[in-house]
Image 1: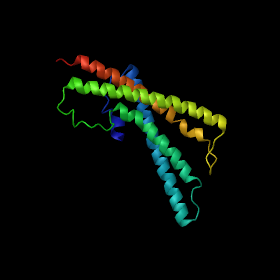
Image 2: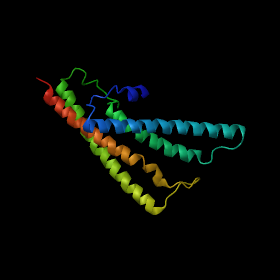
Image 3: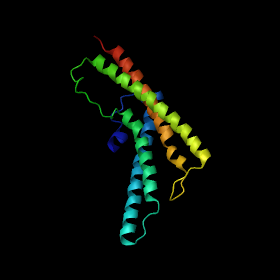
Image 4: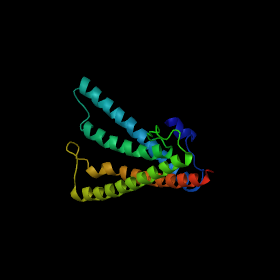
Length: 178
């Protein structure tokens, strides 16, 4: 995936305007996802080494891993959609008309857009409620809403990218001659 981020391979959009902004934001979030995973791996390693050799694990390592996993996954989703890297089962459409396949892709992107924006909205609402309720983790007393901070913009961006793909797929249908 790193080679895709660096080389722009997989970007089928122009390098200006909205496409430039969406692709750039998706790449930044994917990079932050990778950094989160590296930090989580190093923290887990430190905890395992500390527990094994010094009887001193990282306190709250499970809580930190939970928060980091949620952040890493959500931060990677926009870029995965940007390069259309989600799993697609094309068994039934392998020999289908290209217009039909683009129509299915447009419908799937529209559904993804609706769900992603709904998730972003509901996570935002829940994050505000958690902030008001002073909910926190058990061991480290980390405010629970901190875990929502990377997820809200990630799902919002995922929805915007899905909307962009829906529109571009519809434009692609119009561009294919019968």
